Amino acid sequence: MEVRSENNIQVRCDKIPGQVIPRTRLQVWFFRVCSSILLWTCLVQLIAVAELWHPRLLTGLTNRISWITRPPLRLQHSLHSPPPLVPPRNYKSNGFLKVSCNGGLNQMRAAICDMVTVARLLNLTLVVPELDKKSFWADPSDFEDIFDVRHFIDSLRDEVRIVRRLPKRFSRKHGFQAFQMPPVSWSNEKYYLEQILPLFSKYKVVHFNRTDTRLANNGIWLDLQKLRCRVNFQGLKFTPQIETLGYKLVRILQEKGPFVALHLRYEMDMLAFSGCTHGCTVEEAEELKRLRYAYPWWREKEIVSEERRQHGLCPLTPEEAALILQALGFDKETQIYIASGEIYGSERRMAPLRAAFPRIVKKETLLDPVELQQFQNHSSQMAALDFMVSIASNTFIPTYDGNMAKVVEGHRRYLGFKKSILLDRKKLVELLDLHQNGTLTWNDFALAVRQVHENRMGQPFLRRIIPDKPKEEDYFYANPQECLCEGTNCKDLLGPGSSSITRQ
Image (cartoon, rainbow, N blue to C red; front, side, top):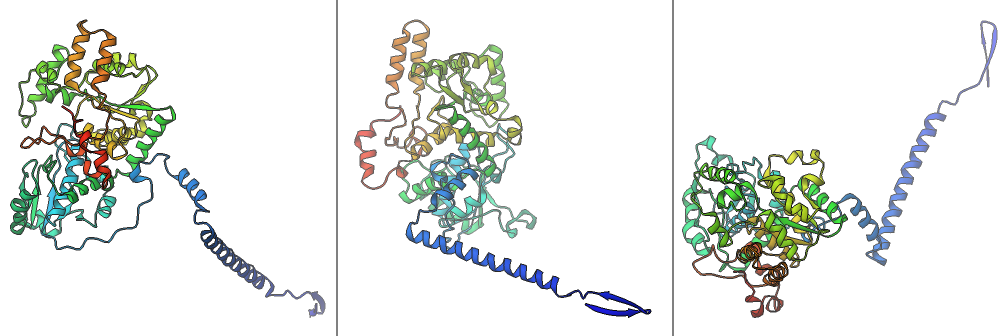
């Protein structure tokens, strides 16, 4: 205490210890820092000791966290977090390969796998493929709108160099014009090595303006066949937006029990271009014909619908599909997901199928319209959702063997030969007509349908090879047998006994 005199008045005042407050704050912060360091040190030591005693001691906790932060379903190729980047393959590039894919989602998917394989064979640098925007579907989606482009590039970098775009010196702004051509369909390595590779020495950049079925199904080197599989099953991953919504669809379906994915390809484009009008009104048949004539690139204009149907070349109608599903043993309680776009004739044609199977659903009825809004007018992105659901379904049944049916079939084989009922439409049309005209009773019809499909449930078998007729033989992506087994197990799985089980 201090006594001071001011104007003859004695004033008593206490001294305030000026260093007390700063010193106290410094001590608190010092204590906090030391405590944090000590806690982190203890935690690190605890983890190290736990890993030493039992490497899986903490697995349960991390798995629970992962389960919360990720959707519950993961297909085999996306179960785990991405592996570390593999070292890039070191090679001298012979040039740049630019490709423009044509067709729907799954035709383009197969083409992308083929083009990566061609780039690997010829030691080229592949430019991220362009997708079809001019076909019937007029989908404006780019590659990165459907597929995870970074994953595509990184996951294949030990095989082929992939770039997002050509270097500036090869752009039109600099007066460069790439050489364009469509490769010959169903070609083997010899064609690409002898006919295509020399073009890169001359032009540096070659643009394939058509890519559908440009690589042979059979007779390709085993390593290249396996690369086609690797691109398909591992390299092509949908965008997070598509995957998130696709997994949600699957989760909703699985929570309600087992489900069938019915690829009901009774859509306007299919009927128009195939010329199949069975069950349509006269006005509808004329509308489909006009649509076919509106597309100059479609060569076949005059088509006799009934002839095509009798040869098994038409998709089943919704009414026919209902009868076949019942004959195969599916009852009214079966949950059926319609994996397709808008059915031609809408609810009028769907009524018999819905009456037979009340638990019919589609993505539009399972999801909020707001969730699907971002995919509207993007048919390939909508098809990607159907693709994911079809892969995950308990049973997959396509009513037409188009590109989606074939690619999904092959993917389900890769995932362990999941049940896929591959309909023999030629035989079914015969049985349907006999039943509907009263020749076959229901019991005889159902028995015959089941007998026809005993060996068409997605079992292992060898691809059928037809020399000089590649369009008629089994499609590689429907049955990629080179990628389904290893070593001596292949003889047991795809041996002589199974080779006779082929589709006619």
